[in-house]
Length: 348
Image (cartoon, rainbow, N blue to C red):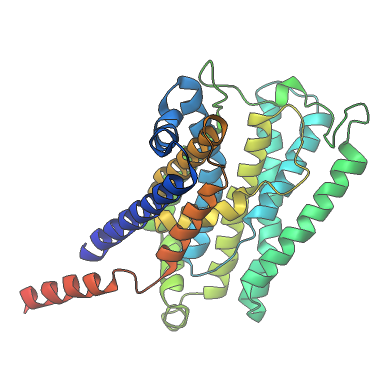
């Protein structure tokens, strides 16, 4: 309990330090720093449309954050969610264009297809890691480029609308597009899907035998193996689950936010998922807050860039500081050691 309390304090301190440094930078570069900070903090919550923008951006971040957090929980530093997110979106878009089904079945078929493709492709670096101990970071990053190249080829030579003045696909069938939940926003039914997935992931991690084996493998793979757990199988299974979630995220994002496929570059949500997972400390429920926070500061930065003299790129500094401090094992470690020492002395 003390350790969990420490992690909450540590993450909060990281966020506050990053925001304070951001405000200092704003004060230096802006001619009206107080107004710029007001826009940054208040505008994302100022109107229903802006709140909708925060939630819309948080939905894909929840998907990828959940996928990456499961991998991190198993001590697998896999960043392949980026390529899976993109390519699964291509798969879902293909079925959204070429299939003719009713409005209930069509999105389900397209999303499941993208999810299954994501799971199968994610299993490849998982098998390489489990059987031959291939570094999952290297293999997953290579797969990102491979999947992007194949996906871009499909877009340009199989799906592209020649009459459109951009690298975009033909329009989706209207029956494939996800339903909007709140009028005046683009919040779609993908929000319900990801929240259900988060609850299911929490139950899987903490209430099932496979979840226990995943956590033990992440804590110490050799010890888990000596205890009779099939760690290679665990690694492959967690890759399948994470790939399924990332693939579903890409499919949901494409069908929920667009009426045609228009990603001519990697959208970045997969790599952002790693930041969400780090902020959430690989806890499925905490992914919700981490994704909303990241979406909030990005929408705030976008509004600040529009209505003040501070560029939106400033938010990259905030993200970099958060990553550096969270990944620094020595940050506030002295306080953690004091807490553990006091607890040990009380128990003596």
